[in-house]
Image (cartoon, rainbow, N blue to C red; front, top):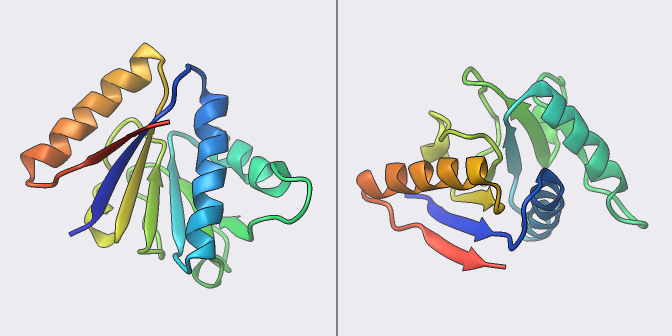
Length: 142
């Protein structure tokens, strides 16, 4: 049964969620977990792809998009869509508005929430989804 954590940011805007996704990814990889970042769209996946290369002045997090042949060998994979089939099973960072069908394969799930109304509404629905299935999500106000 995966551990589910909701990370609540104090402000609105996708940049905060994307920066948090990078920090959580770096921490998880440092702990030896493989990470799958599930985005809302290909455009968002490409934007995070760029951000993971540049968000720190020194170092980077090795990663690929889910259609890359190296996906099984790289610690971080970015993908999107309902048909995604991630090879990772460590930490799912969900930036999508819905819970992906494959969520139970992961040890940990991170739901990143900012203060925009649309994101908060989707987060409430996902929180209820997990609760209705017997999970006890944790909430972290950042």
